[in-house]
Length: 112
Image 1 (cartoon, rainbow, N blue to C red):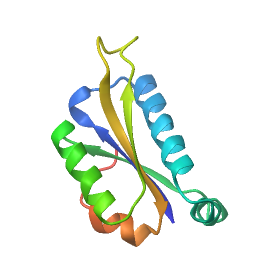
Image 2 (image 1 turned 120 degrees about the vertical axis):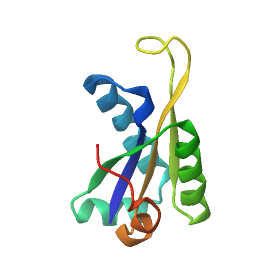
Image 3 (image 1 turned 45 degrees about the vertical axis):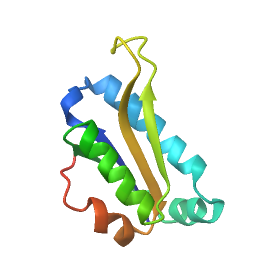
Image 4 (image 1 turned 90 degrees about the horizontal axis):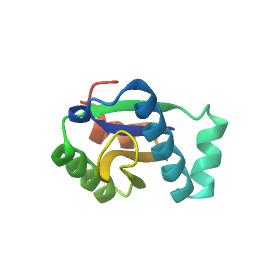
C-alpha cells in the first residue's frame, strides 16, 4: 500500500511551498479514498512517495491514467495569494492503494 503525490517540476517550488502543496494533496486524496483502503494503508505504515512530472500537460495526463485505473486522485490548485499571482494547479495526490497498481502508472517517474 502507498500513496503518491505528483508535483510539477516546471513550477520550481521553493521547499516550503512544495511541502504545503504535497500535504494538501496527501490529505485530499486520503479523504477521497475509501475508509477500508485508508485503514489498510495506515496499518502498513502509510507510505508516501513524491514524484516529479514535467509540467501541467504531463500532470493531467497522469491524473487521467490513474483515474482510468480506478485510482483515487486529488488535483490541488493553489489559490494564488502568496507564491503565485493567480490560481495554479500544482500537484495531484494518488491513492492510497496497492503499490503495484500505482507503480504500473507512475513507476517511471523520478522522486523529488
